[in-house]
Image (cartoon, rainbow, N blue to C red):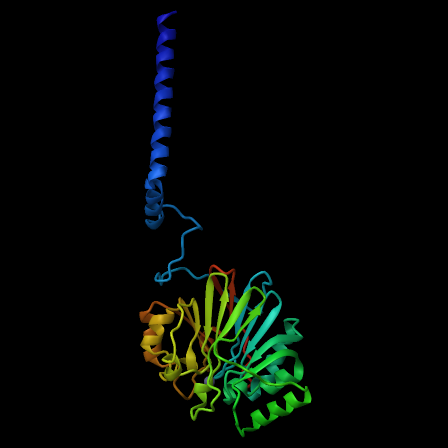
Amino acid sequence: MGKRKRRNLNRKAKEIIVFALIIVLFIIAEKTGILDKFEKEIVEAGIVDTSNVVKSKTNSNEEIITSVSEEIVIDNEKLNILFFNVGQADCELIICNNQTLLIDAGNSKDGEKIVSAIKELGITKLDYVIGTHVHEDHTGGMSYIVDSFEIENFYLPYNTHSTTNFYKKLLTSLTNKKMNISEAKIGDKFSLGDSSCEIMSVDNTEPENINEESIVIELSYKNQKYLFMGDAEKVNEDSRKWNDVDVLKVGHHGSNTSSSEKFLEQVLPEISIISVGENNSYGLPKDTIINRLNEIGSKIYRTDEDGTIQLISDGESNEIVKVNLSLDGN
Ligand SMILES: [Zn+2]
């Protein structure tokens, strides 16, 4: 055997030994979890971009994809929540796997516009309709909804004896349709496509302050939770424990009657939505509430500044589309 050949063989043997050592070290590193730690460190340092980074609830800097659109486009594979711009009022439409839930219907003057906007989405039937309480800015437009859609389940706080015109009109519409009002009870649950809803608060005893009647709904969709407060106030917030949620429809249009520090510390929303009228005479939302939401790192969207807000979720994260659409009947 020539000298050169033997040298080549020696080099090959060394290469094999080194290669085997690397493999052994790699196996040890993986078994002891060192690799995971290293991977986590480079991800946290932002060296490697990975779509599998675990979402952290306390990370207020988490990126939320936001875009602007001239029209509403529903993604039927995902959860869609529309916070309609109805001026100084509330109206939210939730669509999940072609099932629908309407929470509130704006003021009376918004009723026709809301009906048209929903019909334009190709919707003729509403599976659930909830009037959170019998103030005009929530149930004023509700008779138009009852007149215009096939409705499977209709909820209102139960013992309301309002003598307002919009409420009388709503009762007439319900009678004409031979529809009953279902009593919402705390703990009641129903499903909406792949999502589930739970009534978290309601006062059926006709409290003096009608806001306190508010039906509060928590919606869960895969890994996400959404909380719709209506105009619930501090007394309602203090009445129970709350889950950590991803998105909060802020109570009472950002008034300081609601969103107490104790409550916000429990719900810790990444996104807060405020339904509020441009230059409204109540001066809402209040700076105190905006500051509180900023302090907990919540990203705020408001219908007076962002228009109709569409939230689209795959159950892991939320995308915001600001739609240039106003249903304010003014
Ligand atoms: Zn209100």
